[in-house]
Length: 394
Image (cartoon, rainbow, N blue to C red; front, side, top):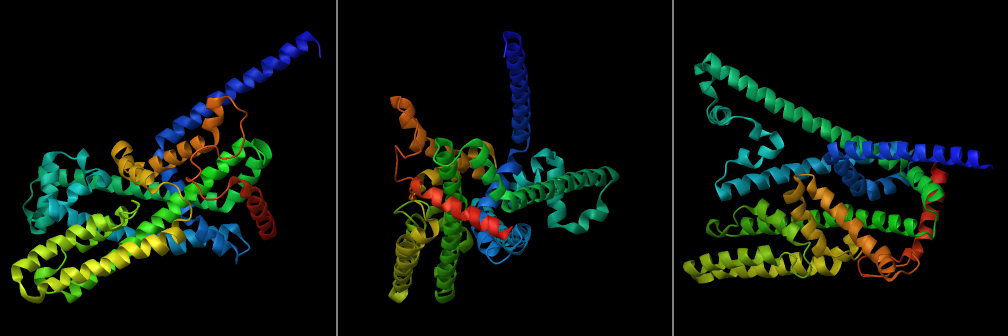
């Protein structure tokens, strides 16, 4: 190759790199514009992947397995979760004195309405018979408010549909994507492969294991609280049982604390009421304390958390990610910040120490080995087994 050919060759490569950089910037812009849809789709993928893998073991088609997982299992579960969350929001609204619609304002885009329109909607909700007394101007305001609410509802439906679509394609094609990554980007044994494997493994733990653990704990807490309300006299019933059950589930992410931060104050409140009544009333808060300690404390720490969560990623870090994410980014921050934290944690575990000390990059874990139970040396055999099963199914 002479000098002129080398210059033309190099110029051609530079042109292609510039073009790829421009495409990458476009991808970043699109991802930023629809970040909520993307992170929700990624969450749905990781939250349903273990279920899809089990279904796929009995079905030859990856597409059918993905569809059955999302439509037959994930959608009903999300419906139940949405209902429980709405009840919890209603309880929180009653407890704080804030109208329930105020808590749902970010979802329904109520802030885009004028004060007059919001007041009118609240009036019509409380007394629908006043519709016939409205003037033409007020009817026009109602129409604008209805169109705004309808637009927000359609936007929510589109967002959910696209997120489920993304999760479906990831569930169906993840084996092919992983194979392309191993063949073209980072082969087995490389640092890039180790990092991608660790991130993928921990995201499944965060979005499936931890979420399942929170859900199970919330259900157990609801059973305990409603069971207590069924047995206790009316004066000693637990108020806002669903809300407290949800808070117990979230608090379970904190190591050692588990549900104590919720059920201990509840027991103290009931004990205070029982002390004023005298007699055998104190047996109820004592019984609640014993049952809560066994079911909401010993049981999760001894059996549920190790079995469901699996890996040892720091639960306290994830708790901050779940709580700070919505405060920083909005509703999708609940999924985005945990994802970002996992990227950071695995970079620290695998790459940062070698870079700081100027050592050769290796796929071994150099720091924070406790933030990930499985050894990276095992991933080659596991990925090979996954590839063989994927090839057999196709």
